[in-house]
Amino acid sequence: MNMLPFTLGSARLQAMGSGAVHWPDQDLLLVSDLHLGKSERMARRGGALLPPYETWDSLTRLEADLRATGARRVICLGDSFDDAEAALAEAELAWLARLIDGRDWTWIAGNHDPVPMAVGGTHLEELQIGALALRHIANGEGHELSGHYHPKARLAGVTRPCFLVDQRHAILPAYGTYTGGLWCHDAVLADQMGDGACVILTGPRPIAVPLHRTARRA
Image (cartoon, rainbow, N blue to C red):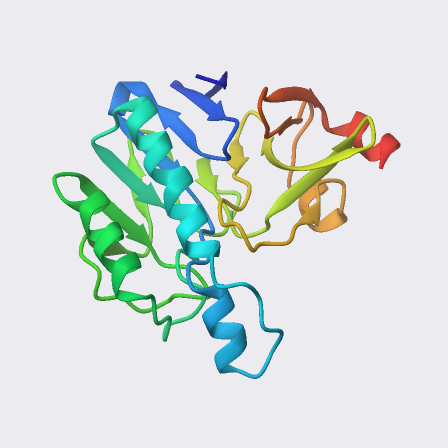
């Protein structure tokens, strides 16, 4: 599997090339910002008519990661649905139900989906596992895993979603197919990261580089 190990507190984690985090000791897969139903939401609100296949693609990759890791626990770190009225196709809802079935599945509330969706699983504002806080938006308290910002980086002329990791917290990239990104060196992100922060670019082979290198090259 294309993974790059990193440590947050005492937790031994693995950044996956897909944008997910595998936590083997907890038998856990974490993803953030799936934004399922984005094309439907944009069409419903009179926006651009995007090809309606992003949910299918996101679920295909999620199922592949579950198969590769064998994880029996899943935590989605918010903005799993593009809005609180997301209307997934019947086949997509059935697919999601199959993935949830038999797994301990938790949905963390995000700013796009603050209310529980009727899709099964457990809905929480945030969750603490050992010393790690799992929440949608980082608040700088303790060791935390979060999402929300959709970080991306450019290296050697290639732009990819990325993880941002320092000694205190890790910000996950957006997992969803139709998601933009915020440059990892933008002040909103860079100001949250401590000394020694690194960027882990997603892709066929995850690559870790110091945050300041991507800032110079962007």
